[in-house]
Figure 1 (cartoon, one colour):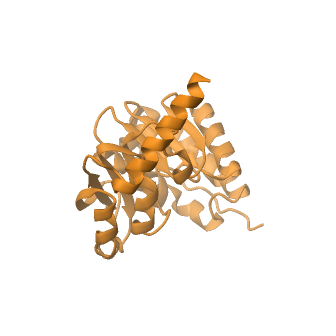
Figure 2 (cartoon, helix red, strand yellow):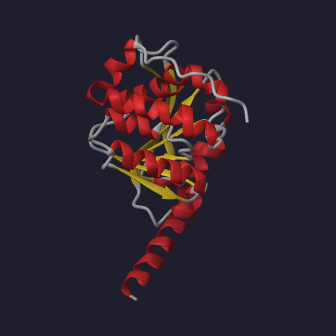
Figure 3 (tube, one colour):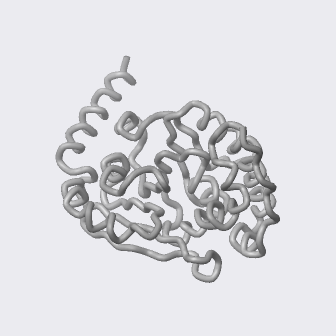
Length: 238
């Protein structure tokens, strides 16, 4: 196994971004650099840039998230962007959705260690939990899949008039154009590209925002959602 590089000290911007939770952010960075590397959740080469490329890059997503909403972080992995978002926004009710056991074990340990009472870890795939988890206001994702494929997983988890916020890089505009038809079929009514973290991260983080109308996922997923809800009611009565 490749030995992890040393975690650099937290930059000054981290104190500004994480505020009272700065010490918890440092502990999370240490966990990523140690257990995260040992368990194969992040590559050892990512350790020197954990702060700028990962923690801060994800934490500034909070600028795009409304107050007091429910959030589902799809394919949360090692907790990015869900954990940094939770550290800066205790007004949010966040679900970390991840299919792999070793990752959900890590996420559960982090949530308990950092006392993130407003965060729940759920093991599963997005397509498996639709109808089992309450629909959310916001779906977040980072480095999970191309936008068109990500949308088929994330959008059906939304409440009517919710939004998906996907952290993307230089390909954001291309992906958005390529996914236009798929997004329309999934019930998207408006799309935009945001840049968040000006003055805090360089370059600012790029976010693709997809807003949906009254039928998240389109007609097909509305039928699946209704069926799942009916099944759930039957099970609860038994």
